[in-house]
Length: 193
Image (cartoon, rainbow, N blue to C red; front, side, top):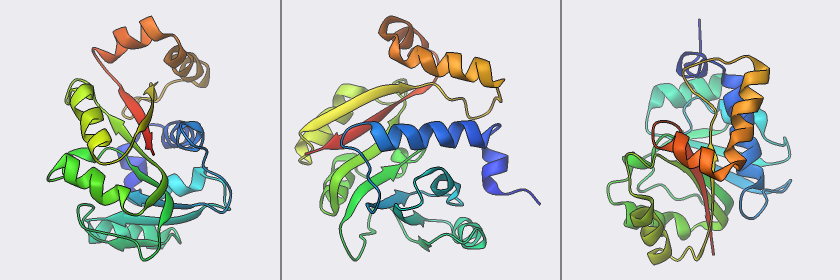
């Protein structure tokens, strides 16, 4: 029986490893011992690619997803990302492939800012949302700093390793990255105070 991750990503290892690298390094660094709250965590496979010393908690609105996370031996709870707040502040909050679940984006950012000490990291599709509007909402929620980078790991296509490395290397070539982002892929944003 395949897991949600195996069904959702053509090459889960390449995609999630690259995501973990960006989450760790973009904006203030994710350090060993930090607590990370993963909103819309799915089956929590993402944690397999983080430093094992990071304290992880997943949140998903689907009881089936949380059951899959538990089957993987991961900490996860069923809750709505719009209202969930951890019992203790976390260093980092992530929200991938799910920002559109926010009922009110600015209110969601304010809510997350209330319990996130270092940074909020999420993906942003510039063809779906105007980045300037999203960045204005982040500033209004108290996130004064923003680090943004393209993210060129495909979800639905498995690429040979060499081609995947070449594609992710293009993230650092701004003119090429801007061109690719007109048609495909996303930004990863790290918002901090």
